[in-house]
Length: 514
Image 1 (cartoon, one colour):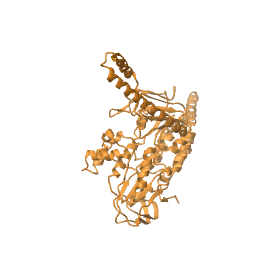
Image 2 (image 1 turned 90 degrees about the vertical axis):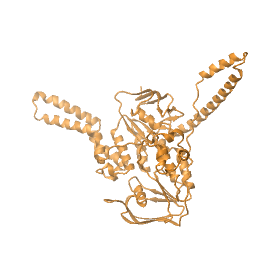
Image 3 (image 1 turned 180 degrees about the vertical axis):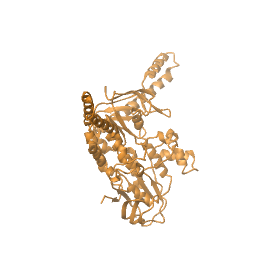
Image 4 (image 1 turned 45 degrees about the vertical axis):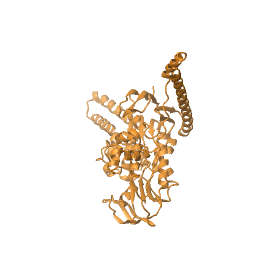
């Protein structure tokens, strides 16, 4: 038996089945990536095997004594704790054991001779356990993960509630790695990570002598870590014991074969039904018709191949801008007690597209919030063109998770009809029942699409995006790229994905630590 065995799994959201009796397994030290289009049920599947949801049918069986930890793409934890205290919670049981061991050693100095061996044996047993679990390398282990993910730049005494969403996400990931369970379950671990830290994480996972399952839409990351690929498509889970590039070739072949099989089955069914209708009432052919009807009833119907829901985004343009769109002069940004970036000089020109680069926490989002007036400037100036109409996609947005996509859009545009809102959502790939489901039931990619749909409802001449590709599958990223590329106004973009901004932007504005 593997570390995990899943058999005959079924689960429904809003009466829509996500899986058709799927099977899944994790073997020791197996490095698995789970892929599929936005909304196919990857995150739900991860929640099922993490025992956060109960399946409608089938079994999920973990091997006895196997430990696992789950990194949720929507993870929320307490924030009123320092980074150091939060991370070292992992070691609390071992710290308590060390205290107990020291108590036994102290007793050796005062105990009766006949009890000496008892306390010595207990102390040595605990010490062996601590050594086995690398307790005495705790600071080294902590330092490796903290430095690898760039968390040391925040200061380990910093409270979680003083961190940005991206910074907190890195701290949560660090804790997961420090827990060192038998199996790591990670949903979009590269969100909010810059290139250097993605490379570190890929190397860390590649060398890991334990099993993991990763959901990600970062293809370069998948290429680096994947040894086994599970693909969720058309409610089926298919296992590929191969790397990601080989999987793509094999999947294309399988998809083509499945499409042909479905089309041939549909032709056969149609032809058989026509024969039955023509011959069921004829005395001479009625028996044949009934026989074919019984045969049709026994046919196992193939699911219609589900294509990815395409996005057709168009960001409407408002009016022409002057030559100078935005001018920064000696701008210093940060918070009242902390300078993040200082003395920034920059000029954004008409129709120019710029990407802001730099490692996580350097201040990219802080710049955006400052020039949008969300945060006060600390020094210097920023001046917008009088004709500026700004449309902003934030990295984080808090909203009622029970609200539906239609109600979410109506909160901004109350006069729009249901039909109009449905049409707008459909253009972003949110169709049918998805428009009426709570936002909490949508995947991260689908929630991003709802927010992009909102942006298409406002005329503007300046688009500002803060990590818009998080959670999006490759097809959706391509459509977003095309939509931004065709926008006639100016664009300011923050992203950690070079493959997204290369060929899209005119200017790279890069910040590095001094």
